Amino acid sequence: MTQRKLPNDKELEPKSLNLIDDEEIADHPLCLCEYYNKKKQRSHILMCCCDCDALDTLCTSYLCCCCDDNDEDPPQPTNSHNFKEVFDDILDRLRVPCPGGARKINFDYFLTVFALALFIKIGTLGFMFSILSIFILPLIIYPAFFWTRTTKRSSTVKIGFFLILNILLVNICILNFKLEYTDGFESVEFYALNFWLLTALVYLFVMKNSDPGFLKIQPADHFLSNDYCNKCKILKDVKCDNFGHCPQCSRCVYKRDHHCFWIDNCVGFLNHRKFLGFIFCLLIIFLYSLKVCFNVLYRVECKFPFDCIWRGFYTNFTISYISLMAVQLIPLTFYIILLIIQQFLFISVGMTQYQLFRQSQRNIRFSLILFLADNLRFKESVVNLKNFFTRPRSQVEIDKKCTKSFLTV
Image 1 (cartoon, one colour):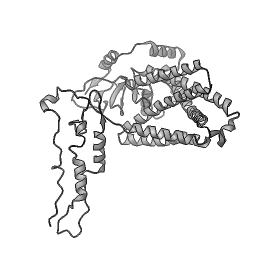
Image 2: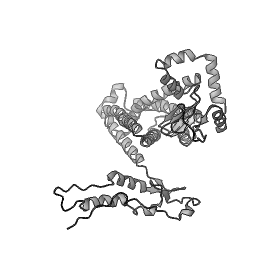
Image 3: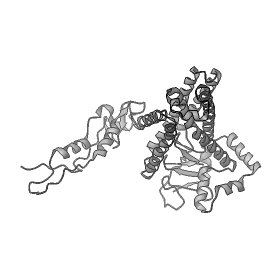
Image 4: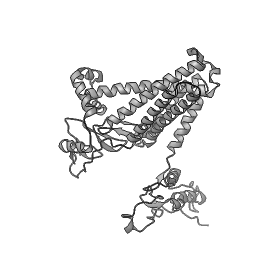
């Protein structure tokens, strides 16, 4: 009996599948349930079970034999589309209706929420588990961050950091509600702290959707020199580093400082002041939350510092949750303080973090401490701080300066 062979890849190439005619696609906007799939084809949510070439080929490879009758050792069934492609198709078709087109369901949200809930549950088991919960999260996040940077897939890490900060703020808010019923502090202080929480959330939303100062110069096709951005094809002024290319945003940013993974956006010329306001709100929230946590622990259970290590102290989930939040907020508070000090030092010398990084690349003997010691002058620092906080910033200013300083190739 002759065995049927699998079709080759050319025979399995998907045909263009659109909901409307090609002539109408250019002028017809996407409805709530329409989207462009990974093959750049227009599709619909109701067609999620149609055109499953990868799944059909995978099933056929295991149900049919792909060998001739004369072969003594028949090879194992092989599939041209592996499980990863099938899984990618499933993720590409799981979408929710949204204005402007259906959006993909990002499972990083669910994974991050589940991981943080698990860490909170583990951290409330005992004092040592609270300490362990601080180190588990960085040990998971940072290796994944470096792996995604090498594989050029950093969206998972960005969303993870963004959600970690969101959930941390929500946890602090829940903590405040619990302390309200235990008379941990007065109601005026409670509402004041929640005001700063709402302010931080507004800053977070604005920073997430703000333009850091992307360069909008259109490149031309000419000979490429050495002093240009490999991605944006923009020639830079060799005398300054006023713009930097962000590998996560895939854009060149004017006066780029760094890419903040907590807000999932770059910090640049247009949103640098908003970033300082955001971290200043966080510092107030963290400091006051630590004060409240220590006051409640001292009044309720923890008369001495070593009482918090006692196992019976963690029998009450509310008290153990408060102690866990205190343990987690201590390193975050120190980190925010160091970040604010770093930002003010860089602003005082009139440079960004990216510009100092570029100088360290050009000079092996570059020392940040020596550079700050040589360039920090009181009058110049006051002028730089005044210009930073008072001078208006707009996209028009970026376009004018880029026209003088940058060319396109």
